[in-house]
Amino acid sequence: MKQCDLLIRNVRILTPEYTIEENRYAAIRGNRIEALGADAECPYTAPQTLRGEGKLLMPGLVDGHTHACQYMLRGKLADEYPMVWTRILVPFESGLNEEDCHLSGQLSMLQQIKSGITTTVESGSSHMHAVAQAALESGIRARLARSTMDQGGFIPPHWKETAQECIDRTEAFYRDCNGMGDGRIGVFYAMRQVMSCSPALLEMIADRSRAHNTFVHAHLAEHRDEVSYCLQHYQLRPAEVLDRFSLVNDRLVAAHCVSLSEQEIDLLAEKHVRICHCPRANLGNHGIPKTPRLLHAGLKIGIGSDGGSGCNMDLFEELRLLRFSIQAVQGLPIFDPVILPIRTLLDMLVCGGAHCAGLEREAGKVREGYLADLILLDVEQPHILPTASLVNVLVEGVRASDVTDSIIDGKLVMRDRRILTMDEEKLRADGTQRMKEIYRRAGI
Ligand SMILES: [Zn+2]
Image (tube, rainbow, N blue to C red; front, top):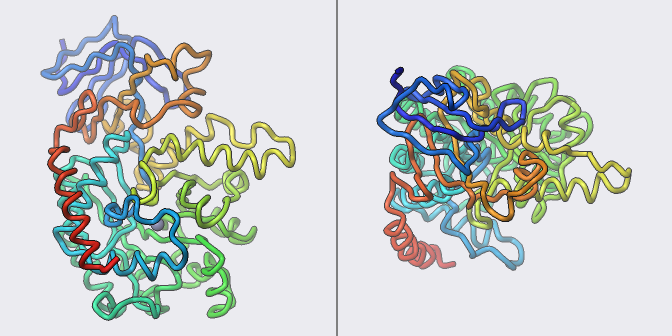
């Protein structure tokens, strides 16, 4: 018999071709999938074995765009009149301290892991060392960034940074945290959005991210105000502005991408930009992206939660929102019932997500040699089985709470929906308490 570290027996597996294979085993050694095969012929033993009967093994999900530090705004933003950003978000986020961000990071990652998310791609806030610490403790894989802003009248003096300070603090974050946890934590650069970054800052971000060969996470083509700002100040559209500062390339993770022109789509496709849609946030605030057109241009698209403040971080649900909004607005008028087919959607969820994290060569597939970032779903439930196609039901019916077990970087992080790395009850109690303190300090 061969020895591995973690073994999953007699399980259904979602293949990289989006078919289901039954009665398989998966052997994990270190942080990689060492072998897959027919369970009847499994040559492995392991100190830890999970029984896979009634379950489906699939790639862990990637939350391609999130805001861990806004987590404690949960329930605070519904039915609020404008300007939510200046009245609530800025006083809230600018008042956060290290401990707030650590706890917020833990709560956000707790929710993500329970939702089947094995990698979080964070667009960032101020106290990112604390969020990196939370990621390290939670066991999640993370690509973190420190948000940068050096202009905009809405920023209170204590939150304002010069371009040089933005860069120096990002450099320190990169130096201290990139590669932590044997590479489980990576650091990207970030620009909040083009309206809040001066030309000097954009230039420096392009320069430093190139020097480190790391990614840049940005909000892009999110809404019409941003387009209007770019047309007024640069006589260019948002993606064209970023291109002018050499930021449009295959190291750019662009979140939202709703209000893009045809030329901008071609530009992003030509430069292999990594796109992340946040369907719920887009539907609420920004509109419906031209997803079929983006895919047709060759772009890879992942799915993001845009943070847990206004949703339950269920990426299966986000995918359904995208599917039906595109179907209603772009499919129906031209009578195209397959404008976004199931396998395309599933590919966005797993491979598109891995692409947002820069992990496309080693995650997003249950494949030998790939990272052991895997989840098990309980499929023997009335909303899933019986079915003519489990692959179709993955998009049509499965929800985050169906995830029972989570393996990240080869380690079991959740078993039977119990998180093994964090004290869930204590975090909830601490969060409830701290939320009140933060709101009191922020005056919201
Ligand atoms: Zn965002």
